[in-house]
Length: 135
Length: 335
Image (cartoon, rainbow over all chains, first blue to last red; front, side, top):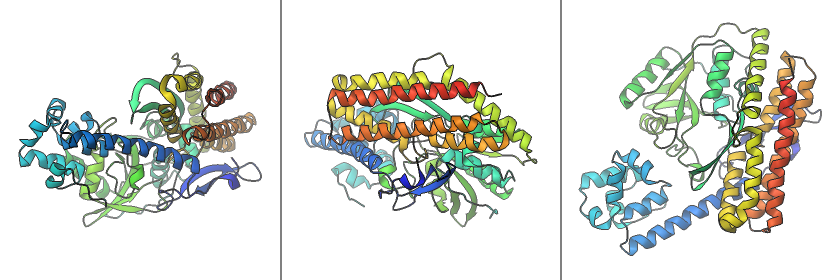
C-alpha cells in the first residue's frame, strides 16, 4: 500500500486516536502513516454490533415473556456468555444458569444481585427491572 | 513515582510495548517492525469449531506474549514476568517496580478500558500497555496504540488487569531487566533467528489449519460458507475475518505490511539483497489481503451476494497462500 492510499474514513476510534499504518513512500521505503479509519472496517464493526443488538432484542423479548430472568438481557448486552459472567461475579456456572430462571432470580438476596450489578455497571434496581440508561 | 519515559505510538500493542520498554533500557535502535520480525510475529491460524464472539477464531499473528519473549531472548536480555492470584499482591508488585525505576508492561482486557470507544470494547484480553508512574490515585499509562499517554485510576487499572474470560491476564506484568549494549552483530543474529522461526511456523507445522496451509484451508472453507451458513451468517463471519485482519493494531493487511517493513530494516543489518525482493512479496500479499477485505465488505454490506462472489473471496486467499509460501521458501534460503 502506498502512503497516499492509506484510507482516512473517520471511525469512532479515529475521533480519539489515529492509528499507525505501514505504507511505502515514493522510493518504495516503508514509513508509518496515521489513519483516521477505513470504511471497510467501520462496516465490519457495524455488522458485529448489529448482531449484538439483534441478540439483545431477542433476550429482551424472552425476559418480558418471563422465560428467562433479566440477567440474560444484561449478559447479551455486555457481550458475555455464562462462563465470562460466572468468572466476573465469582459464581459457579451452574449458579448463573440457575439465576437465569425467573423464579430463582426473584428470590436472590440483595448482596448477590449487587455482585451482578457491579459487573454490569448498573444499580441493583435497574438490574431487576431491566432498565437501561444510555450514557 | 515518576520515571523518565518516552512514549512512541505503534500499530500493534505488543510490538509497541516491546519497542518502548527496550528503548527505555537503551536499546534505542529497536523499532516496531524489528520487534515484530525478531519476535517471529507473523502467523495465520483458523481454528474450526471454536467460536469467538459467535464468529470464526482466526488470528494473523502469533500467540500473545511471544513477541516480547522471543525478542528479548534473541537479544539475550533477561525478562521478569509475573502473574498473580491476588489483586493486592499484583498492585504491591507494580508499585515496587515503579519505585525501582522500571516501567512495566501489563497484559489487560479491553472490556473495561475506559479510554477505548465503546464500539471497540469486546472481551479481548490480550491487549498490552505500559505503566510508567503514579500520581496520587492515577497510574500513568502509555498505551502504544494511542497517540498520547493517558491515566487510569487504581480501580480502573485493577479491573483491566484482572479481566476475565479467554486468555485472562491474571495481573500479568513483565519487563526487561537492565540492558547491556546491543551490537549490530547481535541484532543481525536476532534477525536471522527471528526469520528462521517464522519460516518454520508458517511452512512446517504439520497441521492444515496453520501457516500458509491454513490460509488455503480458510479460502476453501469460505467458498462453502454461503451454502453452509446462509448469507446473513456468512456475512458476519467475513466481517469477523476483516476485523481480525485490519482492526486496531495490524498496521494494515493482517500484519503483512509490518513484516515487509521488517525485511527492509533487516537489510540494514544483514545486507542480502534478496531481503528487499522478498519484502516486496509481503507488500503484495498485504495488498491482496486488503483487496480481499474490500470483496468481503461488498458481501457483508449486501452489495454482492452470489456464489461467484464467495468464490472470488476464497480465491484471494488461495492466491495469498501461494504467494506467502513462495516468500517464506525464499526466506528459508537466506543464510
